[in-house]
Image (tube, rainbow, N blue to C red; front, side, top):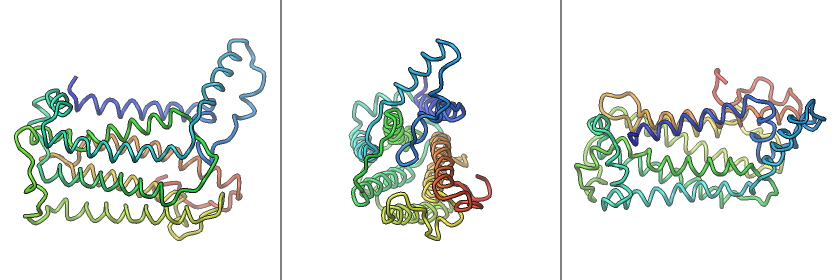
Amino acid sequence: MDAVDLIRAIYVALTSVVLFASLLDSFHARFIPYGARAAPAQASARQPAETSSRSVVTRALDVVASWKVPHRYFTHFYIASVVASVFWAVQVTLRGGAFEAIATRVSPEHRDRSMSITQIVMCWGLMLVQGGRRLYECFAFYKPSSSSMWFAHWLVGLAFYLLMSVSIWIEGTGTLLSHQITLDDIKVANAPSLRTFLCLPILLMASGLQHDGHHYLSSLEKYTLPTHPMFCSIVCPHYTAECVIYLSLAALAAPPGEMINKTLFLALVFVAVNLGITAGTTKQWYAQKFGKESVQGRWKMIPFVY
């Protein structure tokens, strides 16, 4: 299979699995919440099953749901992101074996409509900065906690960031195969395109707002309702910022003649679905802990939509 189509298919598969798990009550209660939002399996799940086969399934789900890792393992996502970004930068520059293995499996159709070298370098740099900033925040804002998450959350997160490190340049394969990257490619010699002029400031602003949101949340006492202006209308504005960052990347990395980079857009869909479900769980958790009126009228993640 074409490497670009394979990566897109993986994003679709991951998104479908998350949606499937969130729509089934027995799966959602056990596998979706994590950290402070995680709660023991619902009482209904613990009631005697109507049949012995159902009882076996219920017990099996409870066992699988008990396979957890510490919530601090989130740090591994951003370590993986930074290391993978550097790895692929070396591979692409030196035409390493890993790069050749993927590049030779990209179809001529995708090679012909390739990102420019400026787009590749810029988007790679932005992804590296994003991963580096989140890694810094994990250490700078860390608070000791006994919270945990289901081990599959950890595996899916690692898979996503490793996949993103390839997705950021995969639609520029045609250019990379015909162009030897040098230090001159890092220079800003020409005026930015209209797309870059519009999308880059939006991405940087979203990144800054997300950092401020994370800093504010880390300053709160444990299990406190956020009251910062950022959180007055949206329950999880830092999730909104994350989606804007990936949307901006998808626009900045659009190949010639395209409005958006389809591979990165599917990555955005995965991020939006995953964070959207978590935002819904967060609002529900706030309502249960602080009362429905505490979050009444607040959007979960996307203003006027969700």
